[in-house]
Image 1 (cartoon, rainbow, N blue to C red):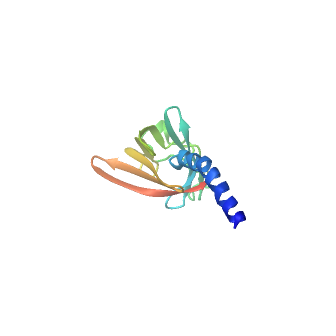
Image 2 (image 1 turned 90 degrees about the horizontal axis):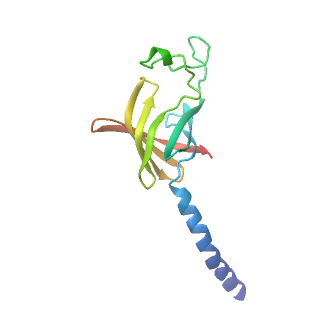
Image 3 (image 1 turned 135 degrees about the vertical axis):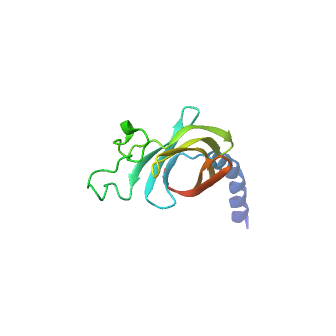
Length: 147
């Protein structure tokens, strides 16, 4: 009985030190994220007062038509169409808009367009990424692939 009581007291003493640390990281988007389709991994990191997101892995890194590394060939700017997909920045001007939420722009390499965007941590291992045109928003959930 005394052993159980000592364990209970030890847990009560340790608990306050554990909970604040967990709460601080709960809304942190930093880390490696797998897109919902599983075709890319994006490294999200703090970037000045906001966050940045850069493509670091592709399921198919080579263009099947050319056998060469995938490039940003749908970009409306001809000068940017040859930049590699690996290393491509996706987020622009992402600034905190609420706890665990950032707003800015996101680049969609699938169509070469940039959209108003919201990124929010919706769970320890889930990042909600939305792109908006006017009031219409669509998005997907990315899963944590590592830190």
